[in-house]
Image (cartoon, rainbow, N blue to C red):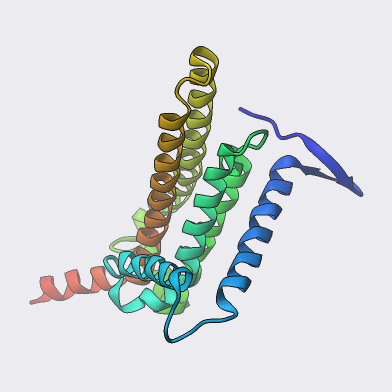
Length: 228
């Protein structure tokens, strides 16, 4: 497992290269969004058209899972997609590494998804109704529900970390063996993998949130069907 380089210290806290890279990504995205949206027009130019197309594509992807909550979930899921794509592609820049190639970063993203699942679930179902699904269809399943929450969060973090780390290691090995003879195919592979892994992470987060927002509906439908 790679270890991050300490860049500087703030009191007792060590600021590593991963943190600096993440701050850089956040700054770039923030400045870009401000510049891109400060002069929006009814007759959009090429940049606005491209951004609107990307946003609509994200919204349509969310609608395939939760049609009635697409607008509510779009800011969170779209932010995940955009950040992870940028973080994954950072490894293409010489002397930089993808923040998502470090387990601490992917664990933080997975923890954010974990908290968001419960946040959206409680907002949608209400606290008592939401937590009731952990006892359905029988309270004996409570430990298994809790174990499932933990394992899927760990799997979410490890999956993204392992894929990006192996991609960077594979690229490094190929460059060491073949030199600079295959830079373009390797570059394309990295871009494609960066997009795929970001999409998978966002869709898994979306599926988990959808399950939380509809947690009790499935059990109630089953009960109604049995009573009929």
